[in-house]
Image 1 (cartoon, rainbow, N blue to C red):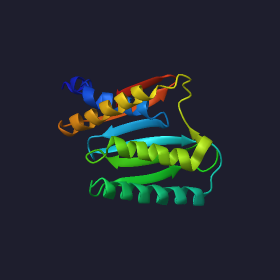
Image 2 (cartoon, one colour):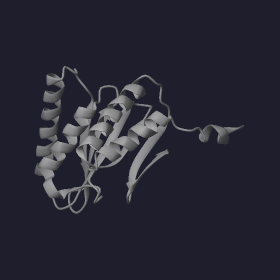
Image 3 (cartoon, rainbow, N blue to C red):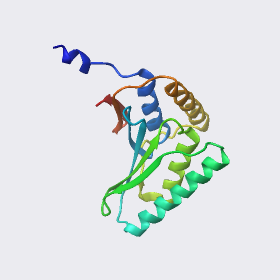
Length: 174
């Protein structure tokens, strides 16, 4: 009878801050979403230019091996990670799907560095001219680590999506 009241439920503020922080700290991440049903975080990187299927297969293998090595070095155990690419010519999207329970800020940094080193200038990043200083980025990464800790202690519901919109970051429920 009162279905409209259920739809207006506000998202967990920590979850919203987590998505906004990821987009703020990592300008190469174009969108991020979280679905409580499966506990997965989806990150999307945009690429310009033409790539072959071999280029993407090489990158996906490179990322899988690097993440596995990172987890071994950090004693993080196994994790769920899925990688795929949408499109090959023009603008395409590299999608990374990762379980939130074991994801760390260090792994996010690794993923963005791997994409930047592999695709170079073809990786589309936020064109913000005001590059934050190193202290600001370190503080944001510390905040992001705290957000991961907070989120793991709370039961999240629904689906949240964060996207870049010009110079802003927008997070909404879906």
